[in-house]
Length: 180
Length: 180
DNA sequence: GCTTAAGCGGAGGCTGACTCCGTTTAGGTT
DNA sequence: AACCTAAACGGAGTCAGCCTCCGCTTAAGC
Figure (tube, rainbow over the protein chains, first blue to last red):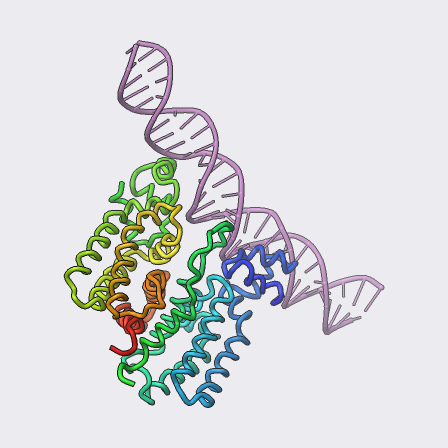
């Protein structure tokens, strides 16, 4: 079942639930009973990935002496995660502030781990102290949303590619304190 | 007619077109004949605002000696514009790269004016030269998207407010060259 | 007063979310 | 083995919104 749901990857997170049910060879009713909302399904699909991100945050906090590098690496992973399925970044952005949804609860640990990564950097004097981790998350999800093409228009001429890495780099520079 | 369309303001840019037609006291068919796509309608509603933004960009380029201040002021206006109607930032983001839509064409002048503002700053050595104006636009629209609450859940507890101004400030710092 | 073409409006077809209820299935009981 | 029951299943049905198409209205020209 989870397997078929990874069809998120090809059609984005807004794939019709009927389509998913069909591919999974299961009735639409069954799908809704197991996952009452789309977010429950997303959360189920992504749960292990979030645990991994939380772990990695802690590892980076220990292994990287430079908090700047640590945060940069972690945000890169987070951005790559959110870019996996079209529409995911928006869903995550909404969920992060809403612990009442399954997805929100699934993100919790990851968010906390990331927050510690930022606050450690702030204590070490690497980052501005007037920002919260929510600001950083907003920027990261904003970048991914901005880079996403909504639909795959076939002949949509080769646009300037809009690298999320460059945009992340800009943001990270903006997070650093002025005089280093 | 245009007047009724400013009901975008209350329900966001995704307001059902039938609802708009009803409020305008007009048939759905009539609405579609005048504005074949939703973007045509948005473009019509926003056209003068975009001209204004283009003008302002040119004024700022002359009046503000510091290109940093000029870009900051202009991006603030742009962000405020995109935050006017829920969903607008995403529509604009998509349209900017697609001159085949009415909205894309309406944005054109504004984008060009903003681009000159950035490039002037780059020539004056204020901004990194490895970025394009599309990067800046992406960050700006990303910020507005990230700050938007998708739906107005009534009792949605007072979340941390997530100021777009702070986020813009971060990005602007990131745009500046390292050693000033 | 009549003709005709442009403009109007809404019925209808389509898709997808979500619900509800009749049916199937499997486990336990005699 | 036959039966009972409760849980799991599946899809028909309802609703909303997008968009098209076609019959009707209206007004301008004769």
